[in-house]
Amino acid sequence: MAEATKITTLDNGPFLVTGPVLLTDAAGQQFHSERETIALCRCGASTTKPFCDGTHGKIGFSAAERAVKESSGQA
Image 1 (cartoon, rainbow, N blue to C red):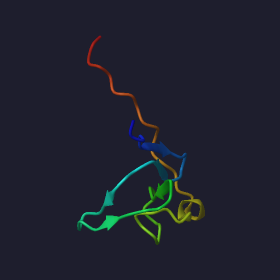
Image 2 (image 1 turned 45 degrees about the vertical axis):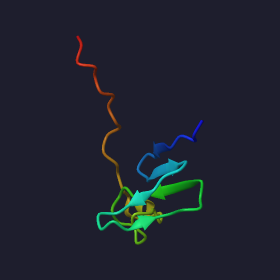
Image 3 (image 1 turned 135 degrees about the vertical axis):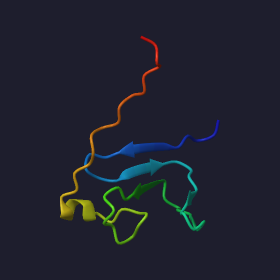
Image 4 (image 1 turned 120 degrees about the horizontal axis):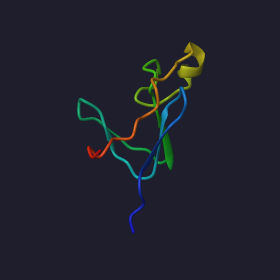
């Protein structure tokens, strides 16, 4: 069975991506990582975008509300 990729949202912090992933930016540039887990910037202030550099803690980043489960559309 192939290893699953998992994305975890940290409160007021980055997205942690664990498992195999190919990250491609809008220009088509691919980012490869040898790490098992990478942290992706969510605050927009990182100097190492798309990766997190911890700036969220220095600027007091406050994330939007938590994800809401989709309803099945059935009452």
